[in-house]
Length: 341
Image 1 (cartoon, rainbow, N blue to C red):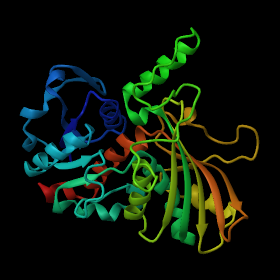
Image 2: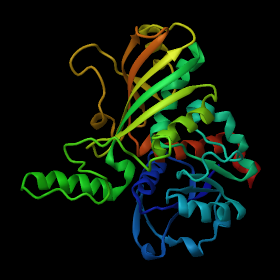
Image 3: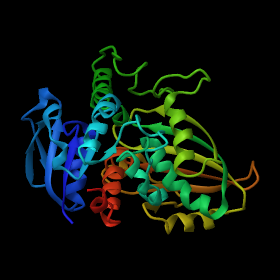
């Protein structure tokens, strides 16, 4: 079945990645529409071997499309996603705005595909936070086998998670360091070049940041509300690719070999875990890939049934654009677009 699809925020980093992934995966597109703000009308974006001209969000007729992929931020999603849904499109939104709404499913296809059927209540499906997406892909097979009680995760998140201007800030500060220009911070609270910043999103009353809260709340909604999770989210001077150090406490014992085998057999995961120099994956190696990579799997002897491992993924792909396209594929493969039309 071919579908008409709109990409809202087509000129942004994630929107352009969505267009690339739709083409790469030979998504069954009949007509594709690149949607952007009024100032971007007529701007050209690539879609496979085609070029699309951007159309104005405020005048676009969403009744022409079956699926609308939103990559334009929370304020745009808040206003326009319900309008697109009311016009007949199924909206897949990459912002945080609808994620915790009880009538909006929060989906990672490898983890909770069955929950996608709940989209009929509002005709909106949410993409999780980029750091949550790769985390739950990694946790799912372990939870199914040994039941996770508690997770402690520290993230090492690239600047692309904060957008193009953040990537430009890293580039300009890095370049400036070699010509003795004083680093100027506009996007980040402190210098990002040759530094790490333990602060992503705004601070909450309990001392956690919203990024850390998102990981806690979204993991519970996607995987299991009984899981206890604490997170520390850190921005690092990397352009693309999020990494996570994950420690889990299980109800049942699971050794390193058993965990590696479970992860190896799970969808969306590639295990690269040689106990030697370079026998692991780093962010620079995952860029452009679809997989979530797992390395450094080992037993944590400090707690009963403890396990620790390293997780890396392209945040613009699995953390955003790829996951949205996979949700769209899920809708088509299960015949849910026909039922929604």
